[in-house]
Image 1 (tube, rainbow, N blue to C red):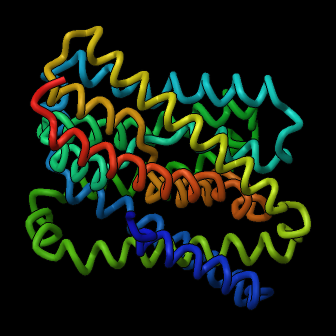
Image 2 (image 1 turned 180 degrees about the vertical axis):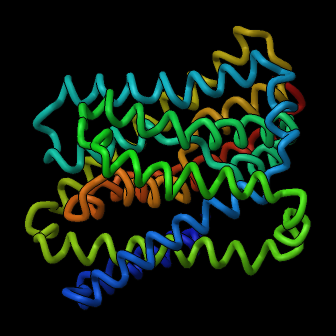
Image 3 (image 1 turned 60 degrees about the horizontal axis):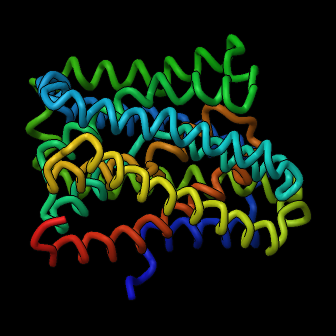
Length: 316
């Protein structure tokens, strides 16, 4: 059985610490300023890492790339909306927002590629699909949040400025400086990766501190967490089956079908937490990211089992 993901364990520890020792007052204000800077740095490094030609290469197998984007940014939101309309009273409002926000997020990069490799899938296609999904998500996710959650506040003047300055601008600057610092960023991948993850842990601690002060654990029960886990599992299993079937219908090769299955079903915790911090009020961020954290562990566990199964195949 797969162990708890160390990154997720760090996030859970941050939640526990925020529950026991939430930051308040001036400390909370200073940490919010620090998290803003950390988020901008994360997206700057993403832009610096990515080779500009990767975007052009990603459109070569256009049917696969479009299929991944459709599953990520159309199928998932429609499923989330359907469940929320069908079962509106199953969860409290903030948790439903979290499920819907999860459905609006881009795919993962590292784990999608790693699992595709384990499963003997089309790794170059997975690299392109996951990369394109994350680039598109910087713009598409805020738009989807507005449409799916009817969260008009996303497009307030302050929110537009936050998205531009914390996400788009740092990414664009990183892309512009890729030729100068890209190789340095790649050589220092491990320490910079730890910096990225440390920044996300800080964002989670700050967000949950605000949520604890606002009484999150009086609003969210163990029943809510269990139901959210069930909804996350339902979404994951349905999309895994759908993507596999879609690959067969389009007569993709087995390796390309594997790439579609993993890239089309994954959701990025690394992108989701910073985006939630930008798009939602401080008081609700902690609740909104809970469904994403649950989904993160489910997708790692189930997709690892599936990748090992695919690795032993002769064909489909």
